Image 1 (tube, rainbow, N blue to C red):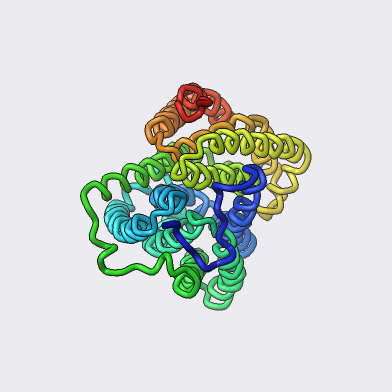
Image 2: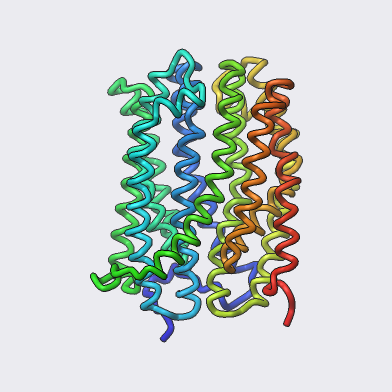
Length: 450
């Protein structure tokens, strides 16, 4: 029996023109992720303009650790939801419910273990990162709140990715918009009115995410009977746990390897001085926004390929990948032009500065790295598509190449060339890590016409 849902926002990706469906699904995801990035961007802007460069450096020096954790938990929940999308595509309602229940159990157990371990060793981790410098206390206060707020993060990601797995990418957008405006208001209240400093920015982020998670749960309860679970759904078999962790940890580790490499790179950046930290922090915010359509197309392909893999419509997987690559490459062309025209103005706006050193290095980072965005498009689309149709190994191999590359650049080239070593890190590594993805995609039987 085909799975049923009541919400008109759900989108079945197994029927219709692939490029249209991918856009219809991806556009709400894009704006949802954009508003999620605004959580961090607003913190950066307000902290920099109200509390000054030292506070901004304190936040920037540990933001990569937050990105690492959020990336892992989003990848974990997305991996779980890919299996949900397969059950949805095949019409297996019972399997879908058991997978959603399993995602809740395994998601929170995994989160509890990681959060406790990170909290126990936080001082040592921040020491390895050389985080904060003279603002070490501010850095620790800020990241500690965000780490314990990861329980809220995993709750929202589980809800949002489950809704997306059954084709509803609109609802998470609506709730994130509400939460983003809440975050802006709370930033000013906690920082200006209550005088909480960087702690206020962190609290505002957690409270806003909690609001979006609650709204998602209410929406699911009211509109999606297919996601109403019983006690029996929570009885997990060993095979189910293995299958879910294979997918969830694969995507979580894929993201973690990428972000851990970035975290190691940040440790090198943190030794180059406050101006470089601020320049890189601002440039990465711009990079995150410009790269957002690429990452959204990628995550959309995981769901698209998952639904069509469950429905055994392999021809649609092939045509969908081609469409996604066309969309991504067109976007990369637009960003190339923007990077070489308005980067300086964006760095100055985000960092709230007219420092020539900050503007110069932030601009150079964007000009060089964005020139290679087409390679990044290939990486993101192919490895997410692979996750959707069951190739969990190749994306991890590709991500491991990125990790090793960033380790080498951090401990060798950054020491020799300074920030120029940082600038050239990702373009070189992207060109290396795309190779196994292209080779294994071509070899995969699904990519060959029957």
